[in-house]
Image 1: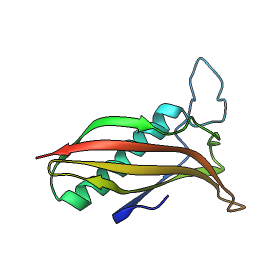
Image 2: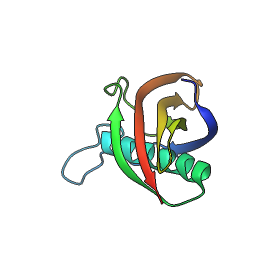
Image 3: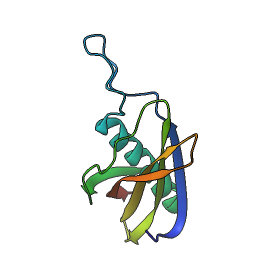
Length: 119
């Protein structure tokens, strides 16, 4: 994925997953946690580009979750950058990869485009 402008990177270690007192851990990061990190990485890139407060207007998921993110051994790596910039809004593309800390192997998890509005 090629983005123009500045890029922001957000790295999150896979400790926040579906651990519940009622259910044993499945050993995977929840999709909602991944989407939260997508929104945070995109907001960081949008704020850096516009230098103003931005709010999320919409999220378009380009692909389903292709590969799971394992807890403990993997970490999420989100790469965000502007794909379209308008007068009061912009679209930021985010690619999410899971990376095995020990082997360095990276797997594509998902791609999303987040639209922001600013003042």
